[in-house]
Length: 203
Length: 78
Image (cartoon, each protein chain N blue to C red):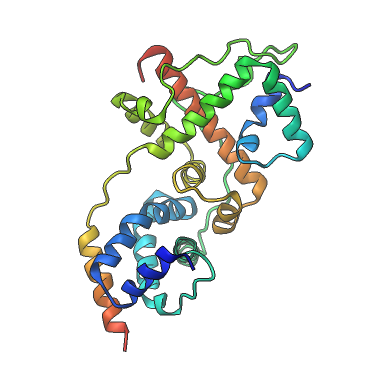
């Protein structure tokens, strides 16, 4: 078990409130993303509440064979699946339209596959510099909301939570090829949003 | 040699290290000769970093939840 996990676990077992606060602050958004992917927006909060109760109930039997994070996310996925077994949704590969489109076939010459409209050079070259433009943040939030629930969950679990593709497959019970497709489509839409913003200064 | 369109289609798999050795080589080879695609990949990485760096919405009710969970744990333990 990682040293951080071991220390935190000891404090959790002792029922230390501050330790639970750290756990919630560190992992709840990842848990929410997993729940969102499986049951959709409407039931996220119930599932996350279920998951927390289950975490407390079983914390004494956590053996550290996975990281604490993986364990928490697995419990969340199980809570989501058991609660909504009957009406569990199909894996929807729908690709919804996004505010600034995507990098689609129109960008390339039908003849030789070269760029027709080359990628616009962004003005900033670090994430921090890009995000100082407050409007871009709102603009990105808007694009993330336009993605399907599954697409945005996969994107957030990968880019923000740093999960491996295999972990995402296991948690959400979707194939690796589906994860790859969801991720790629989502990234191209987000790319198009940043490009649009850098090019026009507007959302 | 890959076209730019084919390179873009493989870009996520390239960034996630999901390509076979041969395909990875083809992407690298294309990037070596194509400044537009180099810019595209660089900006894809920048976009990834930006998503990661976006501030999280503050969680509501963390203290109350932590209090409940800690109390529950103390009740459960012998």
